[in-house]
Length: 103
Ligand code: HEC
Ligand code: HEC
Image (cartoon, rainbow, N blue to C red; front, side, top):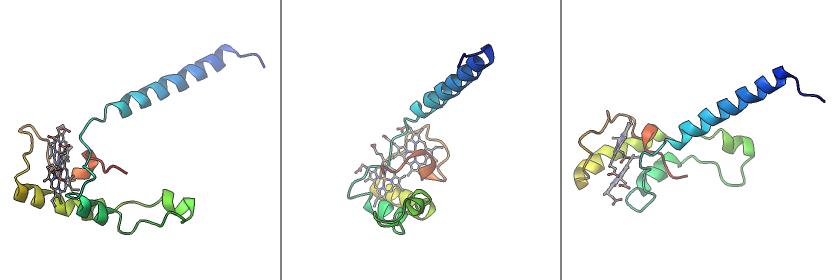
């Protein structure tokens, strides 16, 4: 098969789109939620309905952790333990949109 000019344009578009995609995903540098004893309650809440490892791929693919449930614990505990928010911290509703769980 001979590649026409149109084919090359198509390939270029795909490469550019892939490049943008990779560029954006590399920018995610917000600290993740540490997966430690302190944050166990957040992980346990988010994944309490997680399908077992032997569940079907479909079930596991479409499982959504209960992020809202887990987020209910974040700020109260951080205030109680005196964890500082950086002074320029963005609006704090929905912690887990920005601070990803490590799993
Ligand atoms: C039971 C208490 C508790 C809960 C619940 C909790 N945190 Fe924390 N978090 C802490 C403490 C204490 C620290 C300070 C560092 C440490 O001990 O892990 C911390 C540190 C952090 C850090 C900074 C980590 C770093 O590397 O500097 C982030 C981000 C964070 N928590 C996000 C969250 C989010 C998001 C939630 C809710 C899903 C949450 N935390 C729930 C107590 C808690
Ligand atoms: C709109 C995005 C966003 C939301 C929502 C958000 N944060 Fe952050 N958070 C950031 C950014 C950006 C930083 C500064 C960069 C960094 O350290 O990751 C930060 C920093 C932090 C830090 C300090 C991390 C460190 O390493 O010193 C903690 C702790 C933290 N956030 C906790 C929370 C908690 C708890 C919530 C929910 C109540 C929350 N954040 C919601 C974006 C967000």
